[in-house]
Image 1 (cartoon, rainbow, N blue to C red):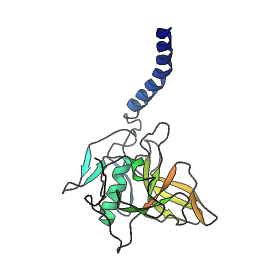
Image 2: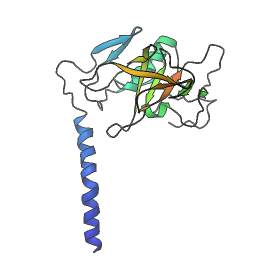
Image 3: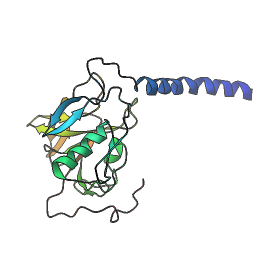
Image 4: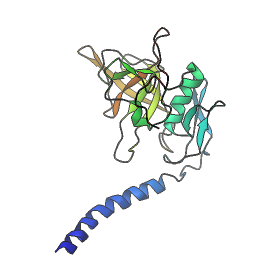
Length: 216
């Protein structure tokens, strides 16, 4: 009886695990012959956006000359961190973490996300999203790491994002509906968790030593 139960459990567990393993392997393959990995596809305010091939392809870690970690080439995280570094000279106190880690659920709306050195707003904040904000998407069934992008522009009812590694056939730009209800702003995408923004010049950005409990 115990043996049959173990076999039944294994039969139920192995297919999903096999599917995930197959997905991980397939998404390291570049299926789009029109582009080469590392090819520049776009740019936002002078910061290049590169082609990554399969979404799980990794081309090594990108570091600045003095060793600041920009992330794994040419993942979505690498673009947003490189964008903030090249455009604003911003270094995140915690320079590691997956896309989903950029939004800290313990940080209250409008407060400082000390790990990123950025103000954090929830999707549904009284503060509207702005161009240059960093947008954070939650994980999905086949993307357990989440996704991040830069808001390129904002209108009264739409915003456009610029993104790296959205998929081998997806666009670097995407328009997402924006709505205001009861004095709060909602980006109409179920996976959007919120947006992050550089503090004003007179607000202190903590250093790694000032930020408590950072893990690497």
